[in-house]
Image (spheres, rainbow, N blue to C red):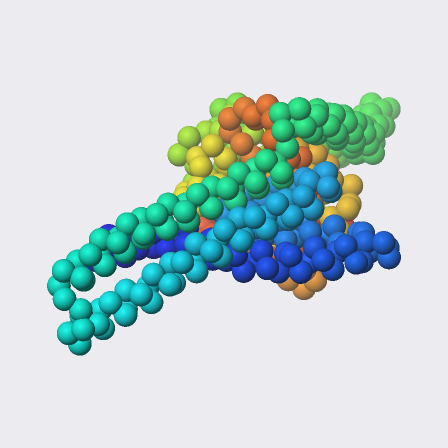
Length: 416
């Protein structure tokens, strides 16, 4: 029974797509007429925005991924060319409806005795032949529709190459900016933190050396010992910001567990990758999560941070992508244009990944990072952007938990 229903569904999907295409074609014809009337009166921007939205809906109807077509004329040309498969789809769908009506008439005539068995057999043979032709016509209309969508909306080889060069140029500039910002941050940490502590340590040792009171010298040496220990801790923190050594001998789960232990906000980590991703992917995952935890301890009143790392699509998608979901329960409202978020987005962009922010006011903050674990294709990829959204997506159920309790509040993305 289930198999029969599955076959019916598979057979009905093309018919539904063609029928919807016929209906949308009527709406597109009206839209093109209105667009021609509004175009001379400064309605170009609104017309093009609506045209892109309609073209995107058509690709979703055809079960095709959305693409960005920079050439505005090609979008309008697609809507105009779509009138042909829309008309053919209306004809084929109409003929199918007529065939169903005629079949009902034949059945009623046979039941009432107005038609002999031979006549019914002849009608069944004719109807079956016409049904086969109609089904073939529906498939042809659907293929024509998809061909137009590919030809007029998707970029060609040259355009893909130019788009890829533009993306790589922007990504390279972003990576260089992120590296420069990280260098300035490390220099600031060394100057304002470690250097000041070392200066204080030198002064304490100098005072202890000049002191003639053994008790005071012992106290100064004990204080100098404490300062030296704190200086080592700060130096270790700076070194971890340059590169986490835990990734050499363990997974990103191990490295983030150490960060969670030092966090002022409890952190729960769920790591569900059966195989380790490439080192560059683990490094980006670590830095994004570490920065998110650090920002969470500064900007909003979160009580817990959840980090979920899994195969993209929660195990149902392609295993060539890794997804990391980070969510806090703070007051949200993070600014996607802040330098901190843009720096994280540039790190992800360097590996052709996607970086999404969802931070509605009073709704917590969610970061979603998707990174490919295989080399990027030469053409047709899209540079990632920081995309705000009004509705946060909760993480999946957590498998393993690492808690680091303590006071403090958090907002993953911070205030920029």
